[in-house]
Image (cartoon, rainbow, N blue to C red; front, side, top):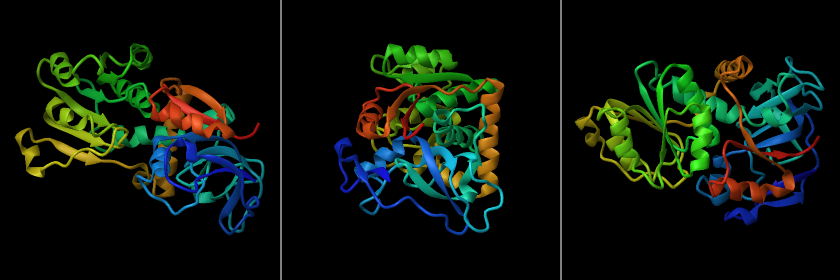
Length: 324
């Protein structure tokens, strides 16, 4: 079985394709999945860098789609040959993985394996970020950082679907065009414009009701200024590094709310997993939620995939193709 293995923390060059242990066999409650495509996410970079350290060596990746190859004992809802997708199980940069059947969802025939590896982690992240803190609606303004990224594009579409006005920050005019196509009402080119000033100008001085921030270090101080009275800021990543510390009492001036969100905490039960994935798939089926897959690369080019994502050279999702 071939897989990408990380033996030391570091830059993207530590991602090495290797022949690893034999393909997995079915254990109780688990099924071996022949992986067809694996999603690339920023959390994979955190694992690779050692920001979120894991025991070495390890196979990275938390999201994939594929076909069930065998069935373990006490697995009732799946059969050999079922097309499935999953997230939350380490080791998707691989030809095979043994997955807890409780963490699998069936992949609709209408979706390709590449799409199956693109929608689940980021789609469900967008779901909880939009619904579980301050659900926006008509009259609300939502500020989305990195609006042309994989999660950003889905957040934009979901906020627009609920009737909110969306401000999106991007680094280039090309990304601005992509964000605009997704529904951003006001594109802010943060390399040339101050997003705080723009957010206040656009809202007539009021600020954004909801700020969704996966960038953190370079944006968080500005979030505090750009938020409206009784606004809500949600931190869900650290693409530029962790945000600087904050004195909790400083939130009192605007009666702001600050939250942190991580997908595993919002999909810990099968009920949550099925509920969120069903809503994402429904949006895709109805056509208002569209996936953008920017790059499909072979598994052996995982290093290139990480460099593209880490260097902010992608718009939408990067997928590793493992098998046909």
